[in-house]
Length: 218
Image 1 (cartoon, rainbow, N blue to C red):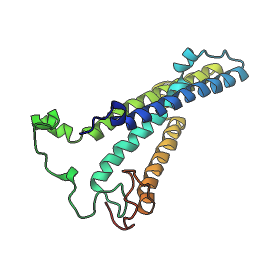
Image 2 (spheres, helix red, strand yellow):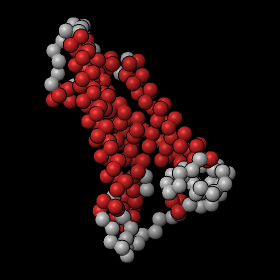
Image 3 (tube, one colour):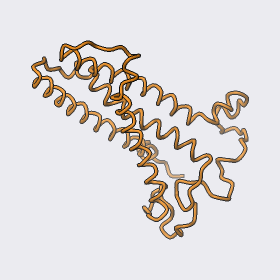
Image 4 (cartoon, rainbow, N blue to C red):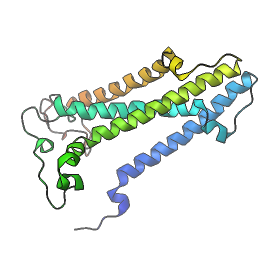
């Protein structure tokens, strides 16, 4: 067996994380500039970069997006267990039993929870959707915190009365921030599911083989 480098074995995750950090830095710097421009125009004190990182503006914008990504992945993982799409590379076969549906069989190289069995195996069988669910809940909470903080910071700058969390949860602004991201995430997933019926990308596991018929489900 050819010895492969760690970079080769983990290249996909490494590149994706690097790209995320690059774009997060871009968001931080441009968001800082945007927020300070607005503060200056309203005659308020501008923020240092350190102050901006702790501001409602940055926290809200960051976790508003993370929240929608984790919600999308959680629901998509669960939906693909039960639902099918004829001809899509993202769907399980319409009639064949897939490896992921087979009964669990403990073996020496199986994950610890599989070898342990019992309640640990029950949780492990759904650990992917549970993990995304927890990440969604955390991101949703931080989005709410950041959005409330940003809303009240704007109120303070205008010398208006701040509101409580229980009052803000009923504000359309918070839900608008959430819904505008949620709908776009499911549009993106639907696009991948549907376009992969007819279109191909040679070499990508997200695509069917180039010569596979449109109506065939991998």
